[in-house]
Image (cartoon, rainbow, N blue to C red; front, side, top):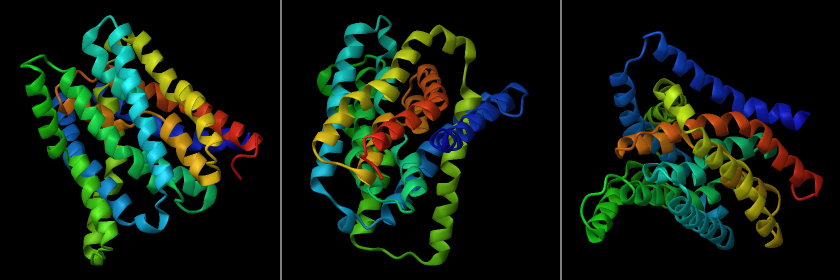
Length: 315
């Protein structure tokens, strides 16, 4: 019961912020222009600052574990490739491929990962190392699939060129690179800079959730209920069921294993919706999966933590 209450306290408030955004849009406090501008602001400012702050304040060298980083990176790559191939083979509506793939593999690793592990162990533990291993790839792969499965213009070479340019220009990837550099050279910002960055970082998650709610289109979402359910089940149940036993077999335990639970089984990150919208996709399927996984994860995350504890894999 304690695990259920803990997990609900972590996820239900997130879902309620989305609901508030939906209500505010419906009563006329927000309009479409506000949602569009706010999505762009989140994509270019608040989410990059959040990732930069998380990484720049982490002792990457002290916490670094090459085998763990490689496991996170290889798992992310295998999941992404498998989902993309599967989506191209199974989805009838090919316009949904990019959003289905992105929503199916991108976790709230940076947003929920540190907070979740801190609640259990009192410090961030292996969360920053997990972020290094998967979050850059989350974003690089998202740019690739959103570019290649977007509006079909040009040949393969032009798509590759466009993808490379989009990766280089992506604010989130730039922020990750700068955050790692700042951590490695141990930059100590003046307090006035720290507080300014912290203000923008704290803004990222609630603002992203409010705009997801405000941009949520119920009728369109219902029309896409089958792919939304499929992507949600893959995200919350299938990926952990496949890859957590492999992680256990490789000897990962305690904080490292909890971080992998977050990487594999946490809700789809709100930034996936923001990226989809900013790269010319509809965003309905993505927002539906974000809402669905956020609501259901209070149960599924509790299940995975309970299973890990039951078998003595986390303390």
